[in-house]
Length: 442
Image 1 (cartoon, helix red, strand yellow):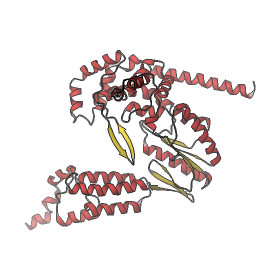
Image 2 (cartoon, one colour):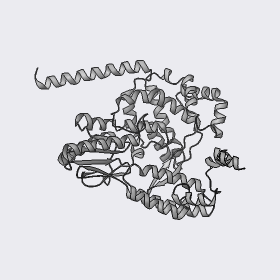
Image 3 (cartoon, helix red, strand yellow):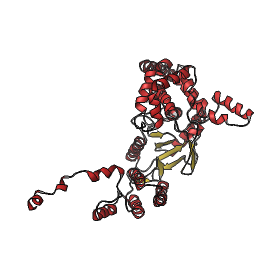
Image 4 (cartoon, one colour):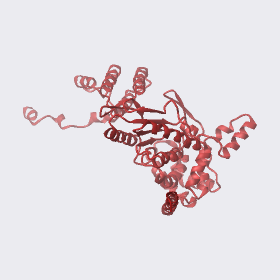
């Protein structure tokens, strides 16, 4: 047996081993059986999980009061390979850093069905196939996990190469809006033998585009678009859906394994549409990028050429709103300038709203505390000091700076007390009763 024959034999053995592991996993978790996934018990369990923190709202209260009836109606629809009519098909348009983002609010009843599909089928089937350094939308991971992994890889590279290494940063163009339905369908078919689950997931994906297509006035154009939707020829998955989050993880999974397994790039991290790859050779990264584009072409994804670049470690590059650069044998982390400017502008706008009675000081305080928590991720002493100075000038340092507490001490209790602290005014304290010497003197 020559070398090529041994390689082919090893590949076949690996395929058989992976198929056996998948079969054993599916048999244990029962996630590839439509009848075992879409059950009354799973719906009931999902309601118990999802109701936490939202029961002050009217719709969850109404749904839970008649939950058994609601679940039975939903299962009747699904058994006929349909979804219940969406309660709300309106969209919310946000402008984030100059980009238009269309968010689809998912109602409580629709979220329950998606949670059942995700928790009892998609996550158990898909999660074992994801690379460890895919840091988004899975339990125990997140943006902080991705940043820690990236920083660990950077420090390892500094130890191995000093300053002499390069970073490839990439970003997908219009990630959620550009994912083809055909790619989602093909990827899901690789995971599921039970095609009823695949069709149900795709029906959820399509259900948020169908109402917009039905509003098209031209009959021929409307019929053509609806037919293309039914045949999985459209693009885009809605922001706000749990199923969309899982699909955004698994669609580029082929690219992740290409980088990690086929090209042996150990120091690689991806968080949704953002990723970084670290290597000593710039030429290797350039060659890798060509291969990545070929893989993305098969998936229907494209890179954002403005944000995709190869830089030397001594130059600044950004990942998840933090700027990194290597100075000597030290990793320097700073905040992205655009985020600092945006926060300063927000505080000035908040001042106008507070003066006009449109906004409460508590809301400004919460926003400022959120930004301060983010600033701790980087070496931002002078930036934080400057931001607190502006906050001090605009709002008197409300509940944060020394200026506020100095005035509070000099002037007694202030009317500007946070809602959560108001009851503290009425609590008794041992100091309120004086010391034993005061009692004796009295």
